[in-house]
Length: 637
Image (tube, rainbow, N blue to C red; front, side, top):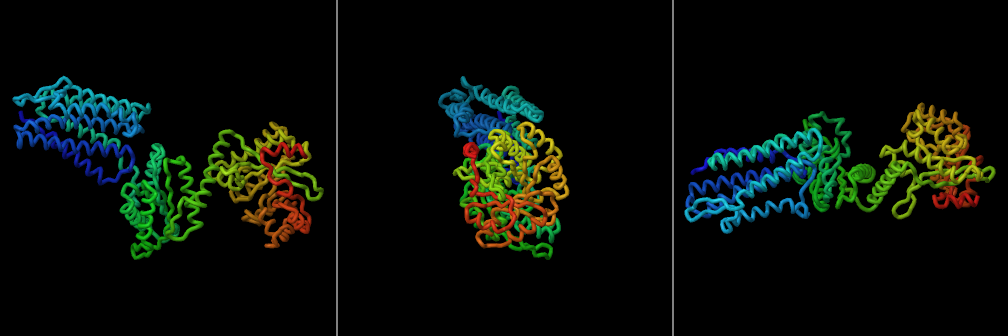
């Protein structure tokens, strides 16, 4: 009987249209999208192959036993492996993937491989089917094995669809079940009721693929209309997957250095034209699936290997236009390039974005137009230090405590111990101390400033109680804080609570604050006065390094100002006499003076002629005492 394969032809045409549409619309290089691409290609290939074999069997070689065997083998293999690809696709939708290099994944495809071998060898073994001498088809003892294995894969797909118990995944699960049941019904119709008179199985397959395409392959979700590539959200999605599956990748970043100038001279449509031209060049040489517009002025192109990113840089750095002419405007463009290569996901995802931000900041400070900044040498050491600080800060936030080192401060008039400055203490991987300024800079970027200030204060008070510093002759405990830390309505309540908890009077507490313009002066002055009313002393720290608004600072109610170590060093080396005039000005403002950086006898002798200096600090007076040395120092004094 001649089979009616009009439905199969319709399915082939339908799948080809979907495939062309899928290829024309650019899609993110995600595992889910690659699985759908494989499912779609398999559907087109198997459907077309079955149509060709049917035509050969009915019109070209109607008596050929080889063609008949082929006509029986191909549909079964097609249905079987389409169910495997369908299972793989739903596996990907659930957030997992099958890697054929792993034993567990090989076990998943093992049933399909065994049945495929049995089907291909059936003309000889007669396990699945065979033709007798008269050319009549007969089912073998394992004739129904293929349908059984197909439904095992369908059941696996349904289980994966229901794996995550959320509303959206429940809906997906029901869709998967409905599609699988529909496919089974078409198999019954084709082979049992219609006696293979109508080829419906491939039509059902095409319908299943189309439904998945319409419901789950939202290709426009991550597209960027300005550059023609993908958006920042798409970039984060791809990076998230690469870290999840520990895939190696290299990324070339391109930033427009003069973007603000371009914004000032371009209309919106002109800016779109500029970005579109840049995006087109990057897609042409970097791959249409690899170009991302991650920020107004920033592009990224993902590659698999470092040498591919280097080659891409060498090409596009020469090709990207230095001037774009739009609407009779010549728009100059200055480019910066930086590159990151991560193997086996050596860092976590948050650290990767931290590295990107750090390199972009370095790019503005160090390089000229079109030079490439690479993650190596001094750049790598600086970024790795920031990452190490970030990891330790996260641990501090979890533990709610930090290590403390101390530095004694001496009363210059009496030569006696006056105070202990307690600082947060961190070590690099090589054993060297991490500068306190670097710690607070990273804390500010991570949004930990206020909490870190509270933890540092509590850890310092705990140390003061444990070592009984007031009983050893020290009059003050000095703790470094930031303006952001003390600018809170709850800060006084916190300080009273901690003072009571550790039995430390607030009039013996001194806060050193570095002015960083993060809090308006009027607001900062209010909070400082509130602290002073509780007996807390507030000191301006690192004067000479960070003072941005001298007029505003001079109006603040500080009692003491600490001159920075760098300014003291320049004066003692004879490089600058500015220190002498600054001290006179600060004295006129009614402030006491503390000099940092008194590291040796020579510096001590040099600063003695500066007049009335209240306090001295530096390595000449023991310097920084690490946590393990503090107790011994206290016992000695």
